[in-house]
Amino acid sequence: MGVRVLLVDDKDYELQSLQLLLTAEGYDATGYTDPREALAFLERERVDVIVTDLQMPGMTGIQLSEAAKDMYPDVEVVVVTAFGTIETAVEAMKLGAFHYIVKSPRLGEELLLTLERIQKQLALKNYVQELEGEVSPEERLVGLVGKSPEMLEVFRLIRSVAPHNTTVLIRGETGTGKGLVARAMHSLSNRRAGPFVVVDCAALPQTLLESELFGHTKGAFTGAVANRDGKVKAAGTGTVCLDEIGDLPIASQPKLLRLLEERVYSAVGSDVELTSDARVIASTNCALEEMVEDNTFRLDLYHRLNVVTLSLPALRHRRQDLPLLANYMVKRVCRRLQIPEKTIHSDAMATILRYPWPGNVRQLVHAMERAIVVGGESEIRSGDLPPEVIEGKESPGSVDIPEHERTDSLQTMERRLVSRVLSETGWNIHESSRRLEISRPTLYSKIKKFGLTRDD
Image (cartoon, rainbow, N blue to C red; front, side):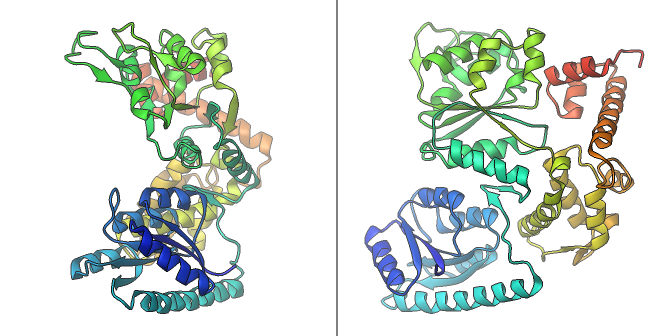
């Protein structure tokens, strides 16, 4: 297959003309008049070059280029516009645009010359990668990165389930990327043109949470000075993501169950039934089965949410992804900070590989950004990593430790951490759960699991 080119231009006749020209010249060209649809296509498919108009309704070519570069830092971008100014050219180049072409009668000829140069550059890059043994591409899907068997299975499930309208429950520890999976589900679904709306179930008390979800009428509660639509209505025919569903108050759970089973709901303070066509995706780091046993989560709601479950592996269980993830994050952070790209020295990579990463991918992201900011001009060394990572060189998670011993040791570390935070906060559950970045029900579950008391 030849070089894959994505054409984006809101003028259909110009788009078709360029697409016919490139196809005739042997390029694999796909075209979109709506930049948002083009972005959705990029979330499903990778291309070599993006050729985009600058001024388009809904999203400019600059914005499209920036979003595309976030997903694929190596993608080549050609900006085409009838409005040729130095300012827009400089802005496009900062975002990594390979070339900037002003529309003219010679547009087709100039574009072919530009693509020819890009093609030669790609051929040289592929040749160098072959020499260095780096031909294998990064396995990725809408911001998720990994090549371990565990992540490849996650990618497979996302692609398989996303097109269907079934409810999905995403499970995994804090920081494993549950939000990214939910967004991937939406982006790969037939609802991708609709909104993707997130509701944080852990952030609000019951009354405000129900108002956030379903809306409220004027006077429904103190502070309700006007009618207000909720996130369910705002989602329309798109997707509602219920983040940390385990924190949903028990009194609110029947209303969510009714929404899932009958597709109807009522605003707080109203008896009027409203219908919803939004898809519901839920995520949690809680042990919902234990919450069902403790009567803090309804069994019928659990079964209704648990239609399709997608479990994300902890980073310590897919250690072979660490080099790929670390290098990928360095590239993205350097580009965001607009600084020259840095490399990871072998001593730093060895430290990264030895650490168990209890905070998972989120912790790794913060660690790499910290290393980039405090490190040298061109290279990240072990000493640039956060102190806890450096001090944890010999901590559990080393590949030399058997799996069952590693798990036991990590549980011991977790027990000590939970106990210490509870002690420091005087057993303030709200503050402890905030510091540990877990939900309150999860903290109660861990207290019970580890047999912790105030005397510990």
